Length: 328
Image 1: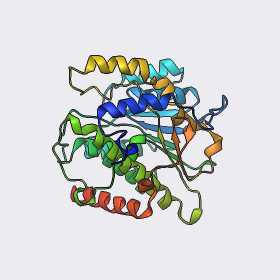
Image 2: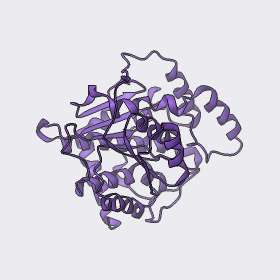
Image 3: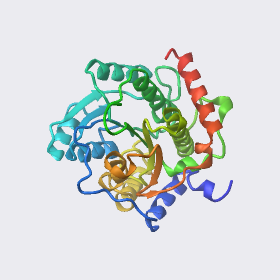
């Protein structure tokens, strides 16, 4: 494994990488215009009760969006906080547990029953558990939350024609990824979707692997939705950099005081880190793009494994197989 591939192989190197990346000069950073807005747009945000998702809800509500917060917890108080901080009443909350595929179906059912048409999907939710856990469907929790639930959600929304495709602007689908998607050496196709036991020491490497799956899915999704070069949907992925959030809440108790200090001093606040999300949601500069990726606020090529057509097709087929085997 090369040095570049070891940047996210464990918690220490991942933290160090995140900090050093923040001090590097950004190349041709994009800028959010003061007038860039989402007035009249309906925006579904997963993982919206805290961190990046919560801040995205606040900032996009301020810019005129109708916000649908999909959350496992914090209902209804988190919605009230977004209304108060944004000054907007266009905020709704929907319960969802992304570790439970049944809950994803129920979320889409609830949205469909209300006649929701989505202009922008922000798929943000992620977990870094203390070890392996089984979901109600017998799958591994981090695999489901960080990847498979996102695949199921987009599939259901598309199958039920729940995106607003009659607007002047094509729908935008935004995935919060990570530069750690570059770390895995290869896909483990032979054991795709299989439950595996692991401890906290393996979670950072697996986190990067599932970010690779998600980034590969974003590429495959863009190709499928925009066949023959016709722009029907914009699909974006991004790395917000290290964020001072509660994602490491299951880390060993002995490390938590140190992590809190590191996160507070060196990591970006959600208000800072959410900027690439806001850019992709609001900027007219990307309205004609089929696919784009930002690291912080600068464009960057995604890893070759993620952009490879054969990998995308294989991932799509295996994801469908896992869902089919579980009855979805």
